[in-house]
Image (cartoon, rainbow, N blue to C red; front, side, top):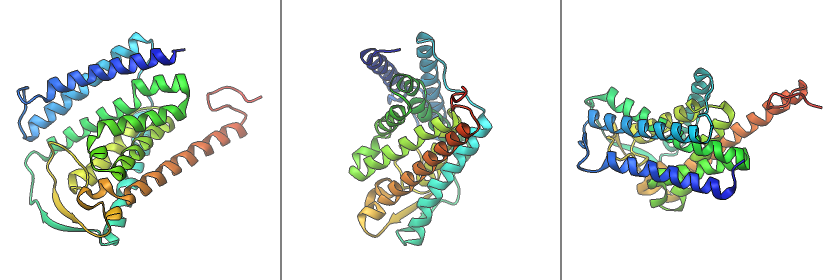
Length: 277
């Protein structure tokens, strides 16, 4: 069992190493520093590879394992959650008259490379929020602390959330908490990665409602109505609608986990695989 000080030291060392590698990849003079689809894909792939390598090294150092589960189950759960989150927010925005199209691209060069880059980005976010550090927090303080740690890390990673005000910060925490709950529910990283991909694809890539540095937008949308609901210039990123739908998804997942645990106890088994007394 790690002490609190030892865990904090490991977390600080891991995040520092990740930051230094990210700076090496993202510096203006670094290779593939252009704004094209191939350059963005190579950058995202390099960042994901660096985080994965560091996570594997730190796990080996602590004799831990990166979380692994059946990818099919995780993709289904994460994809469904991502559709619920993105679809719910977009539906409320559309039916509430809080968004209107200003322009739309006829086409985008290298669309599949942009999507692959976005997938690498989602995998990196899931690995950072729900990987090595999540495992340490869960073992030291329990699943609730690990989920809260995931929320805090997501807020730090997506800087646009806390730069745009308290509503954007609250949304960053809520989405990060949702990723952590998906990690707990599925036992792997594919679920949070799938949910993050669908959310950023729909709200950030298709519409310009999320900050996605280096990525184009397929459409340009104007957000209208009360600022707390429409988000104003921040769009979905700063809207209470996003916060409400994200918390609703968290509630659904929490209720689902409680239901699974209850069924296991009724069958005479503990959630961790042991027998109930």
